[in-house]
Amino acid sequence: MAPDPRPVQGWTFPARSYWGAVYNREMKLPMLEHAFRFVDNVVLVVGPRNMRSRKAIEKIGGVRVEGRTGERSRETRSSASQNRGTNPFGRTYLLSMRTSRMFFAFAALAIGAVALMADSKPDFTGTWKLNLDKSDLGGAPITALVVAVDHKDPSFKLTAKGTAGGEDFEETESFTTDGKPSEDSHGGTVKCHWDGMALVIEGTAPDGTPIENARLTISADGRTVTRDAVQKNDEGEQKRHEVYEKQ
Image 1: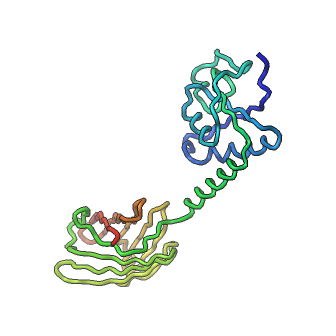
Image 2: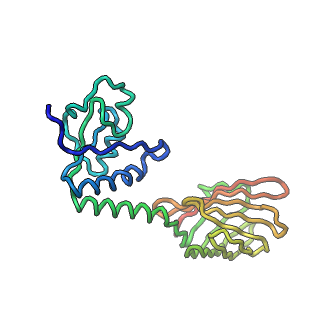
Image 3: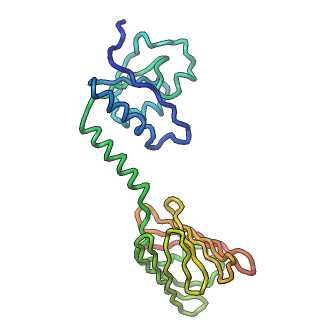
């Protein structure tokens, strides 16, 4: 059998912690772009049982071609080596990459969109009503609570109106999400920062004693906010799980 004249792209071995993300695509696309300056097709060789790598290559436009690699096939290779990443040996399959300006333009847009999503943060702006049936207030005597939020990152302003212990109350707070300290309506200090897509709020009393650590997250559809908090006082810690629904 005559050797395959098409160039074969070298294989990559990202650490397991980087599997399933955009890294495989970001590693392979620059190599393919360079190759397509000189040829119309590039071959990638994958072990027949390596479904993870086959799917990863198909995601970047690879087309499966039945057959072997001719002189590159070595059946004496162990099954373990066949099941690793893009592999030039063993009983293999070919994936042919055809040059396409449209494909690479789309891939570049996709990578850009992923990066933009990674940089963007949730917007908590809206009017949120506490769902008492879905919440666990840890014994707090709150019977009604509505929170209006104006969030233009890093600025975060809220007004809470509700009823607790049979009495109505209203509080307004303003802080930033960049970790800078702000004074709350009770004279304490609030520090707020992002942890991925979650907003972490840490509160201390005027004497510097930690009194609360809360974590805000928003659902994918933007209709539900969850607040998980640990409040500290002389009696110990009180955990609260609050679910708010957008009005």
